[in-house]
Image (tube, rainbow, N blue to C red; front, top):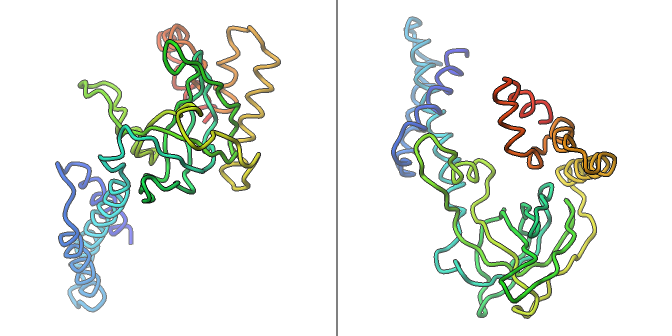
Length: 268
């Protein structure tokens, strides 16, 4: 069994070295090969080959398992023809909102998509959205006070994930894929849509929503108790894992002191 587990890990890691994902036919062949190897292990009288056969079976299963998961998540992409179009969606705030000077950012779990030109568009189930107070130089819009677990109706404009491709730099696209976020976008002003941006339910019960709402409540309590304190963002990061309020200057200090990993890990 240990040989099969080690082989499984090696197979899953092997997939990460491939330049492209295998086709479904190749994955099917790997699964058939794994079944053949399992049969050989079960019925073979050559006991000396048992460990190598188990390792090869595990590697085939690990490679196929990782490839199937990758194919599944990569197929959840925004259709090219929907980029730049306004789409009205209904769903829940799926993360702890991050407020900044011009608005708020949050993840959004899509539950329903309104018809567009008589057809219901297909969009990814999880989005990263921004809601800006200043839409342009001449037009302002009210930013909704969003909280984790709320159900909202929003009109948004989406695009496929894009990030810089600098060597050794932060890979934004890969990070979004790890979070299962397959599109990003922003909320459109009410006057530009026939649908109003509005809160439909104050809370939708689920395990994730309870956790995120609790984190939001703790963050608010800390921020209220430590108003105008320079270390408030650090306390929030240590308690609930939200590191977005830590300034770059503080991160530089933590890096030089060798304690940045404590800030990154403790709250999480």
